[in-house]
Length: 188
Length: 186
Image (cartoon, rainbow over all chains, first blue to last red; front, top):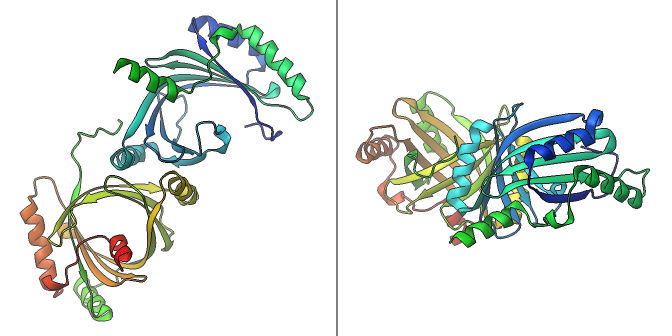
């Protein structure tokens, strides 16, 4: 998405208490710099996996047609950009999901509505997620520009965080997979 | 929209037999079908899997180059006509090596089977006929009767028995198990 850099982006994820208010702050903070804006449902099925994380992501209710994707990550901590992605035509995803379910079984299912906001010129992308059973979350990703020091980028991130009013106590480090599994264990 | 495990599954009645004279059988099947059959070179990679079989089928020779296929199936390993539950997902060739790497890393590879397959169709009876030359294993004949709605297992088996008779396939040459198991056993 931002080919000008090879450095890992800075990523922040936090709980959102008032979805509409946060959406307003995101639109205000990115303002005229907003270059891409879309939303879709993501139906993520995680399969039992001996090594790494295996997940089928199906997109529905999308503004543009999108291929579904089977994603494998060497570990939970792997950056999304280091995942191996197999694109599947939506009509064929049902067959793939049967194969993977039969072969390995489900580990967890995460359903969410994702709003995507990208401001390419300032290398910022924001996801606002409404996750079924878990609540609302924001994830902010800022790529480090090559002409910027890490300190400058951190200052840039701090400015955006302030504009979005993301508080320390709302920060989340767990993945949706972890949160979903923890929630289902609590229920059991 | 999404896969529902309770949905009805497609299924096949299948038989596999050893072939002693490959050219002779191929010629007889060609005469019967009045065609040369479609020829494929296939490489099947099997991934370690606790339930049924999962394999990625990649085509190395075919015109036009066919998409790869991710195939899951389950069947009872018995010589008698085997009823199997399966699903086939086309994988665009651009992505097939990535998927091979993903599944190999995620689950491990249980075996690899390379073969040249001559494919013939008995379209009236929804049956695929394979004459296979399997690397390291030998030559085989296979039937896959694709069961239709309302068709009984007996009707499927009767089609298989009739074709076995046409091609002079003897019960004594029937083989249980998949190529990958036969390779492991060798």
